[in-house]
Image: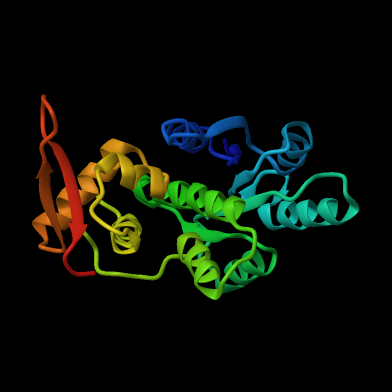
Length: 229
């Protein structure tokens, strides 16, 4: 279960991010803090897997927090923690510094909450893939990096994320046969109801097809397979 610390100077934004994170299956919010010093202390106290880090903080830059975390990791005083930067700062120097400091991604505010949910679901899926690996092939590595840093694509309908469309498409493509929404959810790390929404979108776009499988009784099971990527 990924454990997260949320760092944002705006209490309302922090509250909204916490509410969103807590709805993502498997995630737990360990702490919500509003400053640089509090962020470092929260990581020491809670040892999270992920920090959602704003860069504009009242007592210092989020970049100094990122540097402090990496220094503490080298000293062995805290374990490694992944960082997702969420900031309104658009200057390229901040983006470069965050990525050089090891941030997984840099999300520019304001953004749709569905985009944040998508990043979290893909992060959880990447963690599961890494945990299951013993020896990684190039394809395995490319798959994990693709989850963490998805490329750009044309925008899907309102309320759906292009990155999650790709994630569900990849699950169908990699399957030996057709899949149910529950099986897609298990393979991708997203919720089953979310998986069904994306599968229905792919069917409406003629990229996937639905097959009904009838069992011994009750309602038929919906099964999906990829028609085109």
